[in-house]
Length: 638
Image (cartoon, rainbow, N blue to C red; front, top):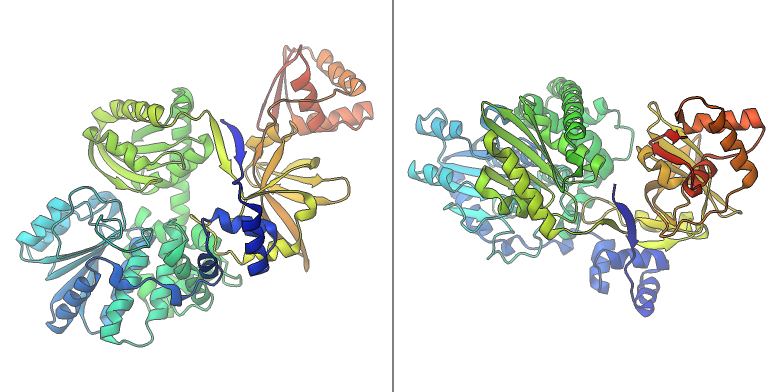
């Protein structure tokens, strides 16, 4: 695990004070706004008031007007339209938006979503074959959340005298498909400002512009709900137009008009809560994604489109069951991957590339995310079948994984994605050399030996109050590009630490300045225990509201800690004698014990008040004792 160093941006005092005065905000909140790259009063006003009056004109998007005119022509001529989309939330919500508006407009429209394992990502060979044999009738094909890399497939469709409109947000290569219209803000000659829209956001922009001509009433709120789901689930930066879609969409979702979404929230157990970005990202989206991962995304699309409560409940229950199956498959692969990584010491590499036979392709991305988080290292997870590997990659801020793949693409059959996530197809025989190439590339472009974490501001305990919490709540919704503000808590002492949770993976403690105690919870942070017990120089936290029995309190959520550059600790000789005594009494050469049980034992036997923090600090300072703390298990070598 890399040593963590914190960085807080420096700003002119006058600049901070002007923002504070103009918007009636604290100095800390003013710093947070500057850290979101909001440098003018106009930018800050738009951020604090995300409204459609600030929405970028659809006409700024290359080919969007041209694409809309082609759709209008298809509707008037009763041409067959197929909306072809990906099987994740972004694809599902994009397809659903098109189906809602075009059906209302009387279009001859249907949709096609490929089966993940049988057809894979993008325009499938099966789909092309069905077009050739006329088992699918289509004059116009609109691709959503895919298509930008499909040069050959689009040419094949053109050869069949059918036209293609591409609506995609993935990175563009030098050559683009020869489609009738390509709507992608990342193409070089697109003048739009909002480059981070996902397919659901682009579909919303396309369809609301199209509706200026169609003039269908009462549908745009439903389109907005779906665009919001896709935007938050696809983890695109929640800035500019994305922020407007997320903010306004969440308002509509809390009073949803979509029967299927309402049923899904009921079955997920969140219908009585105020729906925020967290609920979409961690509760709703996984259930929608489970359809495409474990069965067919058509079930999720039908759920979004149904107007029948009975069907909605049935489909929502099916998605719930599929999500449970997804968790089981994910758990099995995760454990197998960890075993391979630990056995082969892959965690020592610059990037972890791990593969297995017949791993379920539907959960590779989730497993890659969990492994990246666990090892704090970019990770590629590949499932091999009949000599061909299909995989998903997840990265960290310091590495653009798409560019890394591009540097080693001579070993890949196919790839695509973003800075932090990508997918690939590779021959099994090339996996090892591909992994070596990636490691060499990363060695050359990323030489940092420490993990640098940007925090918004240094704070002390007296800065933490409901006023600051209320100000920060104005910056919601949080997500990529607009993370929950992280604060560096300094000049605080540790108190009453313990492990909590069913499996003891969480940590609970107090931070105190001698006058005021603030509760802290570290979800899944048992791996940080040694750093926490070693008198860190700062705690990286976010603010949250804890409601219990009608009482509201501020609680800090632990994200990380910064270790001190030089460890200074004065040993209490009496307490050191107590620790030495129990070490010397043990007959085995290596003592293995749960540190919290050791604290309890020492205090009970010797009637002392020793803490876990004191034990680790004494062991760390002692010259003649070797120790290791792995999670909560303490190893002492005599």
